[in-house]
Amino acid sequence: MKQSLPLWQRLSVSYLMSTVLFVGSYLLARLLLRANISSPFNILAALLPVPFAFLWISKFIQHIRQLDELQRRIYLEALAVAFPLTFLLLLTLGLLELTVNLPAEDWSYRHVWAMLPLLYFVGLALAKRRYE
Amino acid sequence: MKNTLRVLRAERNWSQSDLAERLEVSRQTIHAIENEKYDPSLPLAFKIAQLFGKSLEEIFFPDSD
Image 1 (cartoon, rainbow over the protein chains, first blue to last red):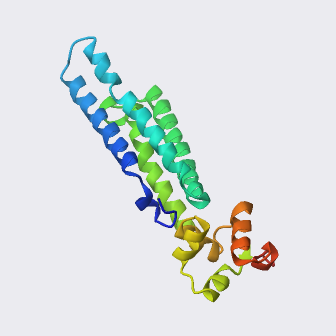
Image 2 (cartoon, rainbow over the protein chains, first blue to last red):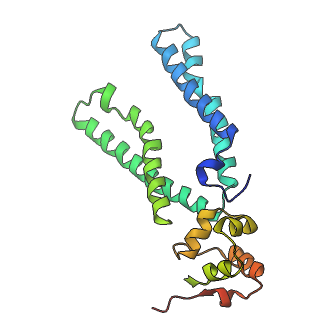
């Protein structure tokens, strides 16, 4: 793959496929768990995304390794924004839950992980803009 | 850090993509170096110097201030 291609064009098909599989397996797990399936199938359903997550992580690392030094720095800066902000959100919601009864469906820290990719893309946009 | 990369590239009529391909980096990296938004690593700086047949000091200069 040519290094001169923009970052988004250098995402490999296998990386994109692994992302689709991971998200798909998570959504399927949620569907299965909502259907109240019996034990031990409910545990299997809950663990369904795990192998796909590992596949996605390995493809993500492969993707990072084929980038050049500036692109790696941009990814690192994006994570440097996303990780502490997610941590802060988790910490704040955790402390608030000690004093206020937060509705689990809307505000529980269980949903915070979904903020990580969102904040990551915010960080990615900020870092990319910095080097333009 | 300042540099003369844009001038050297123009002298050879290379586009940023041409230079990126020769150095095996992204066009974005060349753009960032030329605009002095990013200082290349020492290995990349040496690669640039080697490509243009110049020493590092002839291409990269410290900021005056």
